[in-house]
Image 1 (cartoon, helix red, strand yellow):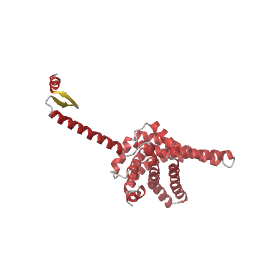
Image 2: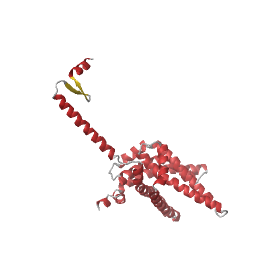
Image 3: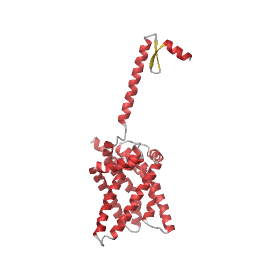
Image 4: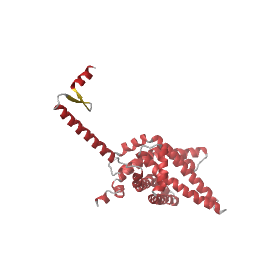
Length: 290
């Protein structure tokens, strides 16, 4: 019962206000940057979703903060200061997540363009239908890879090339977990898309606001909780407790050895313990004079 009450599922509700605060900060920056590019599209005449999505790039560094809060609260089961942790993470990962933003934008933009293009030609030839199927599968693989990239970036000290290489490998290394994560991602995404598509007037505005506020939180939390175990098994623990315990143990052993050596030195008038070594008093005296 205790394990269930502290499970990631239950903590989503018991720690919802902390998670929501992180998402509100993330959503605020996303809304600002998206509004800027919507305005740019309107003023330049390129008023389409490809231009609007450019807001993903500058807002992506703030997604790093949300990822860290989800990791700490939902996976590591820790209580942390949300605002400080959020912005510390953004500061530490700003450049890396700008690149992740470019990659994410490229995947989304190319996927939207390819889907619209091949879907419009699907009645002309079966070849276009086959190409659409292949591109959808390829897009799903890339999206699965991007499940791992953000959490690996805020967790491990790896080069960007290694992060993307390991993320791509994990797509095929944890197939069952990736399928489950993808199904959750698609279900949540379709739910919000269909709601927005069906809504009109004031309800459309409400649907968009709710989607901006809750969609990233729900999908990010669910996906990262699902893939966390496989990621830690293949790359390394999030907490690093084993390393900390080992270092602490080594320090205790060194102190005991040093203490015993000092006691032996006190019982032997010819030797003293200096800088981790036993030396003769005469030698110490000569070294001091030098």
